[in-house]
Image (cartoon, rainbow, N blue to C red; front, side, top):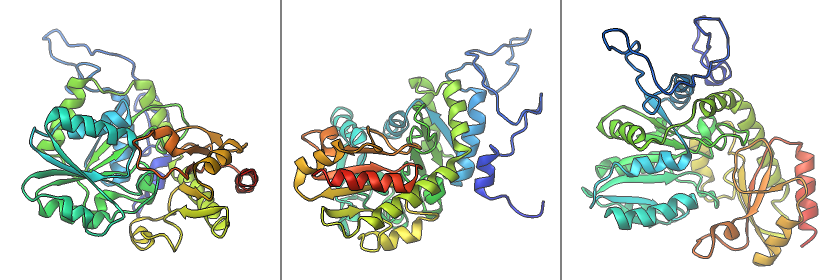
Length: 381
């Protein structure tokens, strides 16, 4: 072979896996919680001593993630939240963090409580305002810049390269939540990110049957090794069967993400002039404020997530969601099935999300069925 394999080929073949014992093309599941020693009390395998530290079932999915993201190493966690909070737990009291005001609501709520109890200062900036990020960073004090792009669920675009420059010029690390884009669309490390985070529950697995998280580092360093120790000592490890399901899901990642992105683009375009919708939030549209940046750092589509702001406000949005028949009314995103929800109702009274916003996770069903369902639901308002 005289050319380098493309990432989608590596994903489909699980890095061209062949079991050395049987020749199986499917990685096995290792369920053991402990590992034997020889008569001299030496570990038979130097790497494996106890299931909470490492499991051979992690080898393939972690290598796949590192390869797909272009990073040096990846770590699996028991959930996306477990992965995210492990990064912040490396910080010391008095350290400063900046994060977008619009982001995954569960992590935002945790950060508020964490900052109070841990003694970490945190600034939430408006991701749609120029200079907001740079104005929030404090040179010599800010240790971590956290971004999510696109920002869930308004889908603001943050320039990763610019964020990396701001972070590094002020002595901070840049961590990017890339759950929505996946390495199919954006690889943040190529734009200067130090760590990439995924709620692997979503697109990476893609089938709604695994709770998992992942971190990928651009380069191993002391900060990264501390995260590894937090995973070990905190016990936030993924089960072997879940790790196997995750790598199975990642083998179809490129097909699923590209199909969902194409469907989302068709939906956004179809309803662009619909007078029942006051605004469509989707970075693939040319009128989106972050479209030009999105074109630079997103490839193979603009993702499968978009939001509608419904004319008539909160009650109209609720009626529209209630009237859907094909779209499932459920929280989450990134599966093969299409989901819809009134986001403010999920997040609650402290949410910064507009009350007229409906969040849509576009799946891989027939586009005619999806558009038809949204048409009839809007007609019920």
